[in-house]
Image (cartoon, rainbow, N blue to C red; front, side, top):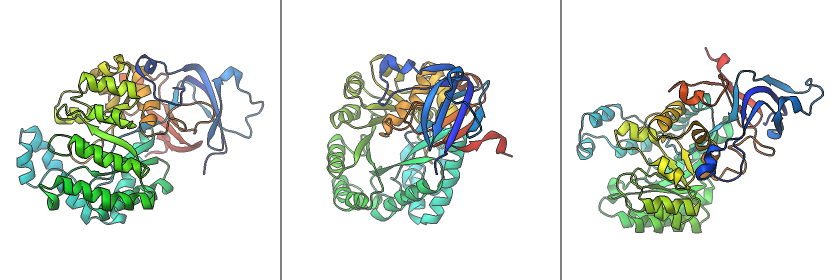
Length: 420
């Protein structure tokens, strides 16, 4: 249930990030700071925002009051790219990779994505749900109020549907809002080795219709990459998904400049993600199409790869979002503080741009910019309150979680003082 009446006052900074669409290019630096800010929320939605001196409240008696003196109040974070529902772990593989072991040898040792597929296929719905709930609790503590979750560790109808069912149940049972994405085209399973086109046919004819019939996904994503799914195969799958009512996302240009960014623009996808090798033409196409460029710096960090050219993307007029890519293989972390630090130090983003990328642009990447990602009248009261007076501390207190309180739909969902 949404909170009935919430009043937040005396915020050292109230960061609004106002807007109902992705902020593009230079507009990402405009985060709408109100000094000594205040906010009212009723029945889970924001009803007023402005300076504390102008609060339109005569008596605070009927309100739940939070005095945010010395603190920064901002929109809850939107982690717009995760693979959070999975079984098993791949800790040894992490260190094999750091030691320079080739991926094919990792596969021969039993590592790689198919390791996770096997573990996820063997896990029950209850087991997957319990593991994912713990992960969501940790995300909430870092200020995440909305998270995208992808399937893609089943690569068969039964397990893909089970992963999505886990998300649907948890979306009803805990505070963090989950945006479900079907990603059956995450890899080609062993039973379809050498028959990728047949696997795409299977996804289109057997799995997609079941996903749509059950209403448990909003997006379809595909790993558009050399040696995985080609541009033609990705286009065919995503067009079929769009025809069935799902919106498109792409894992694009992560390993080679295949043209995934251009395909995302062509299909009017909500986002193109990774983009480590995106071409100048691909970056320009994303800006023109208003597809969000979702950059995942922790994955590059964990893989010792070059970072995506987020600075170039913004300077070219594109809308950039930041997300964790939390998964058991290439990025076993959902640390928003580390994302923020890497964005500033490695991607050369300004603090205000980082805030935009983690809030309103993340919301746009999951088709939620009309309801979350900013603090303005009519939006959900999804709020992160930092333990410091400025958004600058997100980067300055490098890699540390500085969230003091988290509010979801007007209700206090987490606070640091409750933790033992």
